[in-house]
Length: 471
Image 1 (cartoon, rainbow, N blue to C red):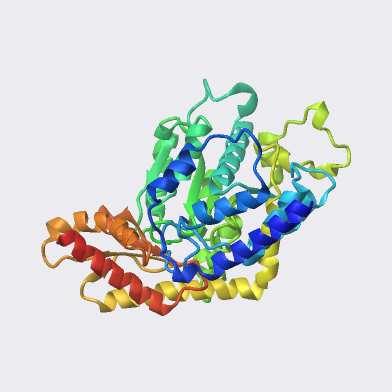
Image 2: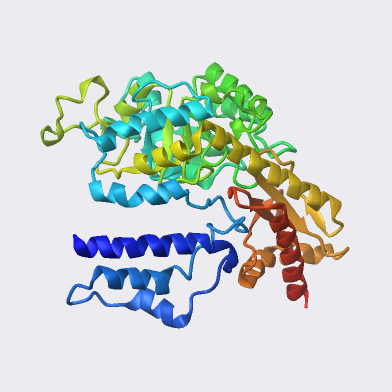
């Protein structure tokens, strides 16, 4: 233990120094060839190495090459900086190293509180056992859709787990054109088939078109198919748009469909000042996916699925062989009965520490601050003659693009190339996408250390990158 105590103290110092100096470093940089060769090609040591050597290798070979998401000028994808509290307790979770499948121990019991806190923050009704932590929204989506599939089969008089899908009318799911790719992946993995995922058009604000949804459901039902689920978004990754959840919930209720909401990134946007009306209907979802490792900054991995009726999820997943039976589990059973994971890490500790450290007021401040930054950048873009705002700002994502005079034929090529050029310059980081058939730039705000000066740097770096490309 003396070796652990000495190396652990050094690791804490290295970690604290790294986090304290993030702003002064490049946001991202390519990995040097020597270090790339070491990272990818090293041999397993014949003789074990010391803990001190391991700390040294992390410091000199790994910390210089971050993804960049800890930096205040990282605006790519939906990746947050790590919460200091989450960093602090990560090693303690590893020290306990429990499997949080269930049982009478801190790792499993704390998860009940964390899931309840998340449901409360999102404004979602919650009962004990009506949710669990996952690796992320992709797994949360699989749990939600598997529960929907099983419920639909039960309603039709058969058991999807026992009989499989062969010989039954194809089940059809409905997603927005702006919906996340994890929805289609889940449909493929669950045997529904991508051809039975209906893509619903969006309106001028990039929200699901409810009239188009109704028409597609009616068309499929008339053709003898089995509409079973509609998946809406509470904060899309392209523009941050929130679908008209109340109207979609009405359609789902009228047609007997499972109502799933993908709030992986944006569900906590409901906490922003004046945002509640846009989220009306989220409380009616049968399942809600949200990621504490996004807006809250809980260190990866930590997702969550919330469930209105825990029985549907348990019916979809519960399998308790004799060697896993726990007679003390009472009526709720184990977390492993509500999803596909058996061995489950102690995710709850990082989430608990992060939310406890911030408190509800701090979480609300974080959401409001990042949403305000997005609106500030949008105003700067609209005031500039060389940028164009592509979508209204709803949460903390800004979709825009750089304009190249009147030579519209080159605008798409230029905007496709800009993100990589900005990243290479090292002073800011943003990513690209396609919106409304156009190449676009997008900036996502999750870092409480980001300032308005950082926004000016982002736009200037974009201009400089565009000039380099044009030259």
